[in-house]
Length: 67
Image (cartoon, rainbow, N blue to C red; front, side, top):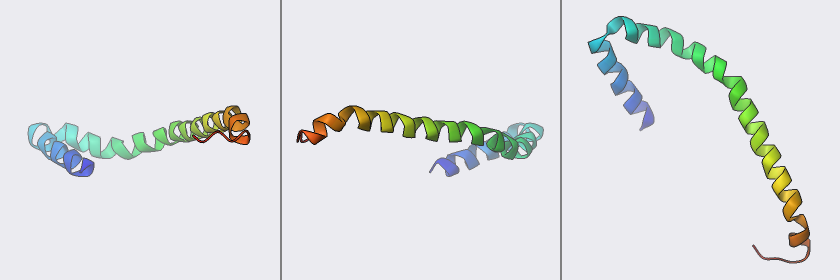
């Protein structure tokens, strides 16, 4: 669904301002490549937070808390 909305928005942009639409097509892969390190940092931070949460709740789990 998100791809369909993106495609329709790009087609509207192509009709309204074709040079800008062509620039979006050229620059979008570059922006995607630049966002990869930020995604990796997000995954690592999410894993670190889950690890800390598991460590904090470990005593309760060992004592038999059902949660």
